[in-house]
Amino acid sequence: MAARPGPGAAAWPASSAKAGRLGPFLQLAAFADIEPFSLIPSSSDDMKNLTYRNTPTLIDAARAERFNWDGQFNSLEETIKEKLLGRQYGWTDDQRRQAVDEIHALILNDIGVGTSNDGQAYVQAFRDVYEIDLSNKPGEVIVDAVVTALADYVRLLTTVEGPTIAFDERAARGYAIFMGRGNCTACHYPPLFSDYELHNTGVAQMNGEPASPFKTPPLHHLNLTNPYMHNGQYARIEDALHQKIAAGEMANAGTLENADPELAKMDLSEQDIAPRAAFLRALNGSPEI
Image (cartoon, rainbow, N blue to C red; front, side, top):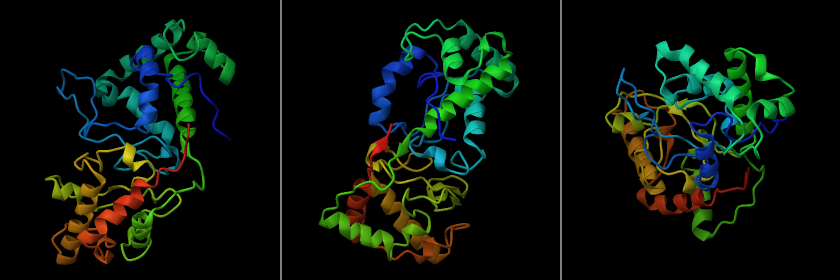
């Protein structure tokens, strides 16, 4: 079934008005986060105010078969629900009931002021789009309805298939390296340039974290979604490419713990960075938003 436009792009923002103001900015940033780590509401239980993970683009995110950098979730709906009711939105494990009640109250008490719904209250928007009356539903049902609306919206954020990409001579050389001796397509194969599988490419170990595999991100819109990798440690595409060369060398030397075997097959040098970066910057496609 095709995704339906849900009742507004911000079915559960921290503030409806804030989400409306951020809309154009989010599109410019390809629905990603420009900071290395994403902010989360602080909690007296753990005093955390950062996720310690970089927020990847939402464009094409729904095409994955597993979600989160570590592949923790098996569906888009499960991912969204756990974010809304969990630490991402400031709730601790023992506050899940409170989180449900908060969403329940927000939806039922909304009067459509300062939202992206053209003045339409959420209850009426859900009635019009999903043919469900939330006015007399318990909190769990309302949360599931909000999750469905958000998931339907995210599924609309896709790159148009078969985008026309203009390559200059340098980008064309980068494309040849990427598709050939660079062995990049072992994980980043077209058209979205991702297999969405988990691979240990050395990023964690090389930044003082335990060696761990992370999901392959798609490569469209890279010039809009810096910084890069799960921990946001690489500010430029070139920096991320330097890391891959170093990881390949470590894999061949046997010093990269639990290295993905494809790393050792890369045939890359420092001279390959500029053309590959040019190719990756050309992969903007056409976001269908």
